[in-house]
Image (cartoon, rainbow, N blue to C red):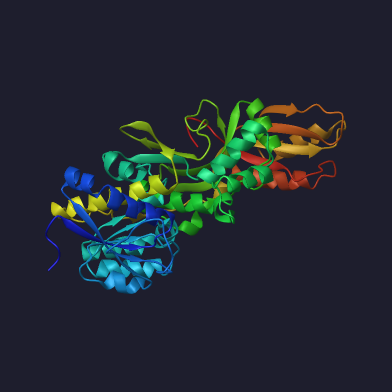
Length: 434
């Protein structure tokens, strides 16, 4: 018979940075958690790759193994905490846990972004709970905020800075005019970027998190592959400086928006934000998510988006919430998702920052303006940077127009002999609407 007392036996898959933080909280704060919640969490088993490895945490009396499937099948365990990452074998282990009558807590953003829907359906079928607060924004309770705090709202938009590595790099490029390679190296040296930072800087990590938030905010099945993704690798300190002179900050943004016809815009890319925008001054490794509800208006969640302690805190918070739901016989509340269309990036409308490196000759700007006008692109401002050398930089800000028009115009402009570098295009996100 399933454990009916306030004792919760936990099986922990993974004892890396976050797993160690979770174990520390359960060991060091167990008495306080028991006093405040009436729940006692007992670490019944831990699965690691190398059980003989020396660790900086005492796990006396805890079963340690290298066989996760055995730990998942252990009948006495109430909750499985999955912190091994990756899509597989994590997905199969979580499915096995749910079928075996266990609740699951996970920080696995890739798995729940790409294959989350079948796991949610399985949880509903088996009457179990899934908690993934730690998968997005570390210790910031944005998932709980969307699911519970904003439950009475129809959410129309989410705009967020969801990756601390990218935000740190862009902040350093902005504050100290550092080129991208230098800012990246310093982020790695400070421990804010992985030795292989690809999934962070190319937008994959942010897209995973956007998929999870959009699914919950819009109650819709989100096809992860349909999320447009563009990273920060080509952002230059020159463009960051020019943007600042024009009154903008450059951030890697995750944007999810519900259109009037029910279709969704889902995109990840660097963007210019007016400095009065709530997200413009979120700096360093901090994350922030701006959520727009029909009843509340704009609400911003802000804080440290990663790190051992914030992420472990989110994991343990999910563990407590699920155990309390079990104790009070609350049914599984994971949402049911509908299907919504996703607009292709070519159809979105935005303002744009465009930079052209052109020969300093009479009539060059007329050529650029003619091509832009031929594609239906209206200009709001033009700046030519003074220099004693040629080529020179010409910066153009546009009015709102379709992405497809801009793409075609830039292709035509790049083919001109007076244009010496590939044109730069950055989208502008206004305070009122993405």
